[in-house]
Length: 227
Image 1 (cartoon, rainbow, N blue to C red):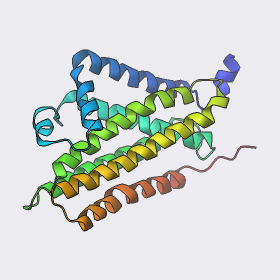
Image 2: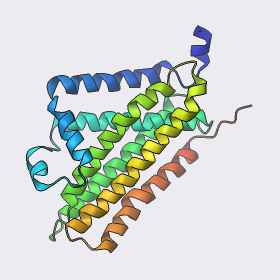
Image 3: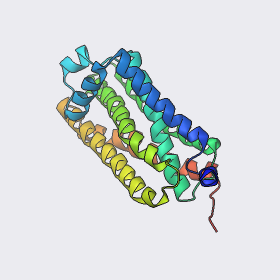
């Protein structure tokens, strides 16, 4: 049994450590700010956040929301790394996970930076503040949904489970991204932004970064072919 665990590339100690860290973050948030779960549930389930929720409930300076966003970035990158590793597209090891983590974090930071920068322009907000908060909230929720998926993927000796599990996780990831795009359109239209600007945002800050991430992951890490 020990030999199987040691030879399983999807169950190294460092990967389990990431999962333990994520669970520790959840326990800490539940201890210091349990109301954060209700805020996230209402914000993720509503099609629009609304001015009252933006003013009274969501705060980008809230340390629990920041820590949850970091945790979700770790988990999302871990799941993507697991899928690439499962298909033999990357070499096992923390270095390849680090590249995936940097790519996922880079996309999120680029989206947030551009949305903040555009808000400084002397024009109508166009729902950019709501869109920024929506992006962060759905990113956190995506990480929470993928955490049990990544945990099952890392469970040693359960190779038969991994194919349906990674397919389920990929379906959740794609569904959440599509839902975020639909909400971006709803936020923009609801705030009077021209449709051409909304489509430009989706192409520039959603579709293009995702394509670049996939390209960089394949370029930085040599593929591994199983015998």
